[in-house]
Amino acid sequence: MACNEAYRADRKFDILQDYPAYYDDENVYEQRDKWLADFISQVPPAKQDNIRQLIKENTEII
Image (cartoon, rainbow, N blue to C red):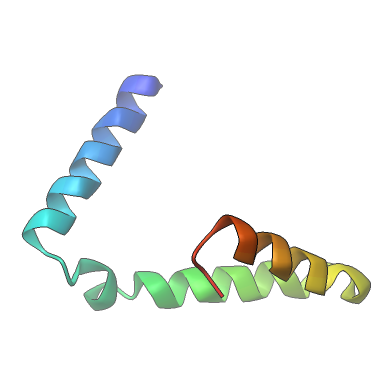
């Protein structure tokens, strides 16, 4: 499992090195934002701000 993860990380690095616009062209950011919006919408309304804050503190998203 660790070998597979290392391979994927290396492959991702190689792709981004050769094709820096990959995330933009493949709509990766839009997919990520949709997934997060869907996830947050399923959290009880009283906790949604807390979840957004946790995501903001732990990533560069939102």
